[in-house]
Image (cartoon, rainbow, N blue to C red; front, side, top):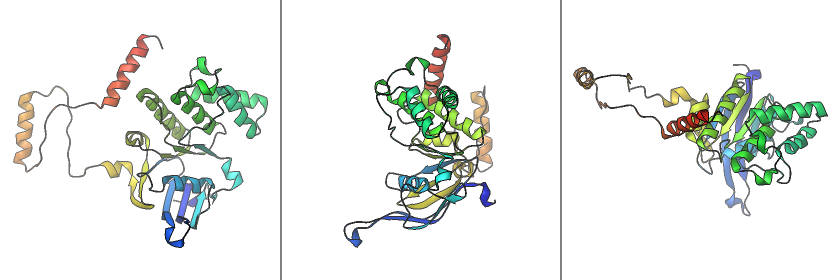
Length: 290
């Protein structure tokens, strides 16, 4: 794949944080080689202290690497023009508590030199896009729930119509229905040709939306690949069907055992609790005419 198709590329990217003594230096990232193609939803995973936040800061140009290179949209990380093509949703939403949602987005739209008509269109569009209830848009941010604040922060990250969106824990503070709505928004961004770098501890969210992922541990890549390949159990065959009688289940199990199949398991399919919850709430909301 040609370099122009890569939204993010790092080569031997390393970051060491200095201590008071040289022996106290902390290697946060070690020789990271990463490639994120344009139009992908890419998961950046790892336990606390694995280097995820350091990687994001390096890509945004907020800190400088100790060694190696990072390219974003074909330009060195931190390039001023490239920054205009990036949207960033941090883990914690830092918004002015005394402004309301419309005033907040209007303020940031001014930083992108939008005129009044452009600001009005962008503010309305992205507040609708993130699903912020119109009844709260005139209230001060300081009165919002965490989920409502998160929606405003996401709208702010999208305000400049970026080509690359970096999201750190995008569903933080949301209930399961809100999580589903945010995941649907991420898929819509992909459909629009955007690239999304997603860092999250909510592994179900990653599984639902990501094309590829990398798992970091102590600053190094431990696992990388297409999600479908990483999750597939190649030695397990699965059959799913409705209205299967107990007798047929027994015959199928006997046939499989006779052919040498091992670790046979039969039973009824289960739904995830998250799906059950979302289905119930959606049904109730539908009954309320929402």
